[in-house]
Length: 224
Image 1 (cartoon, rainbow, N blue to C red):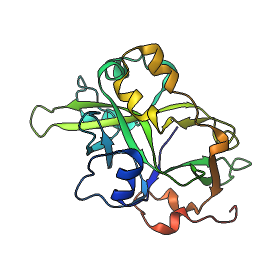
Image 2 (image 1 turned 60 degrees about the horizontal axis):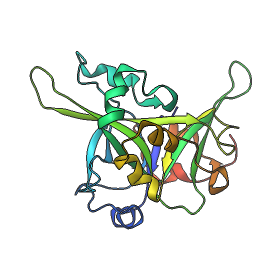
Image 3 (image 1 turned 30 degrees about the vertical axis):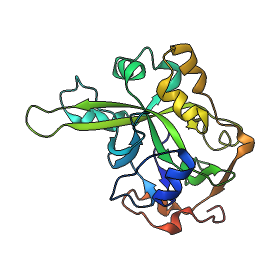
């Protein structure tokens, strides 16, 4: 599962490294992005413009938006089977911009406190999560564009903390995810990022608070 992530670099740095044409005008670095919040994503590989989407996919057939809270992630192995994700996998793939993500290692014993860890690329550069997006319109109100992050089995860097990780894309993989048509080729992109190109370190349990978004959250700490 991926339930929190970071995008701490300035907009111009993200654009340069990922080949994005533009970022939302009101974009600012984030240190604790949480579900249901607006997140920066690219849904069109021709325009390559990042726009705001709501994190937590709301299928077009949903009766109300509350279902989005249960669809912040989509398992790569079952994308073609789940009705909520099948059509989006075929037609509405996106790139969710990031430079790190958090996972929690369960503490020992029934009352053990979980320890959060931050995972990043070793070189500190940004990347994108493979994502899916949908448009949902209530009977009265404005249209909502929402998305989900695809997860896969954890690599050797993440596995000691959690058994799954988000699919991280970089280089040609970014636009292959957007442009390829063959399901088999697309599924081939949904694999763990190389563990030798990642780093992890423990961070403060302050990150447990979804409404706290400060630079201190990404600083390494001793295991608490």
